[in-house]
Image (cartoon, rainbow, N blue to C red; front, side, top):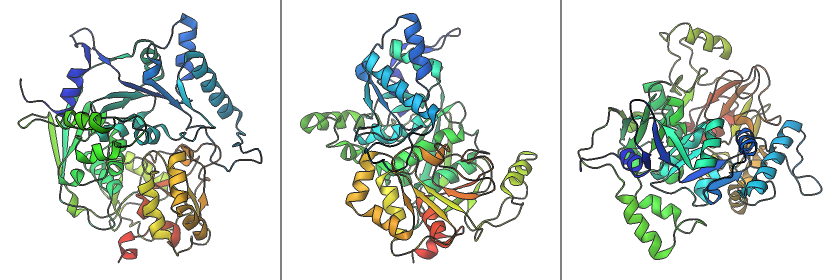
Length: 467
């Protein structure tokens, strides 16, 4: 057999019917994750046609997008003041009861952002095909899974058939050699990659992240990398499973145990790209040459090193429009630029390691006067772990707002948003116009850079605070 890539091995193993000149391939789906925003129409279609969920045991639901992050009320329940959000959550509860789908709802201690919950429960495993009605499903590729977002109509298709029509993507290898320096983390690396290849650089491709920089990362760092693959236009992002992967999964509720885990780990390691396998494209980046990154525009590819200057030769009129919205100018340096809000959260950077980084920098310091800081853990499990380590007290003592889990300001839900004209440093994944609130201006950055901005009140080179 010819040498194959990680992607090709998983694709081939899940192929129900190959692609032809007239029809796309039919691909089997191992795990279908759903939430309250993109599932109602799909379930409505099932009801209209009298259909059932084909594999409810392979379908997992949680609430995340519409969940308020405010403290519980006197009755112990989180108040949902937005009637649309309340309706979405209630509909998911009804649909899951009616179709026999497991739901981690408002009262569950396993509730959280879908792309945080899947991995931490051990539902996400190497070699799987995983889909969800959410573009950042690529997060799960960190485990050596083929994971990607699908549309609402496709959610219905998977619910009824456990399969999906797909055209086979091309392959793109992104190799990062060298080690990241102190103060430079996974978020900086993925922002640098997107800045290099552009927001369309991965279009039509599945990315495999290879090289020493990725191999040395923890699973949570790999999740940050794969999470933002979609921001480069890629269909999915993947990292080959290794001992780090198996160690992360050990002991998690839905992961194999004991001898079964050892057996699976051997199979997982065999998924790695074969020597001599060819990719359609390859890109290399020197991880050791990077500095902390910050975005300046209205897409994640508009990013520079924190000590750099906004390019003066960008594509027009895209650059002009972005700079006008952001209130910035070509050639301007962002270092020292004042900010109003800091958001630490999202499916990109709301895991326990992200909160540890931010708390480590903020410990013993105070949030700058006039700055509003929101820290939103990615799940109930992350929240409980952070509180057991005293991280919540670090944030509160500094003057930050410690919130309940949810998507929050990433999508400007339930009042968690920037006001018009405000500048926010955010650990999320998108900085489009109005993404975090009408007229809000977003600088994407790592948890370390966000924490540094929180206590200085301006865009800061975090390395100066780590010496």
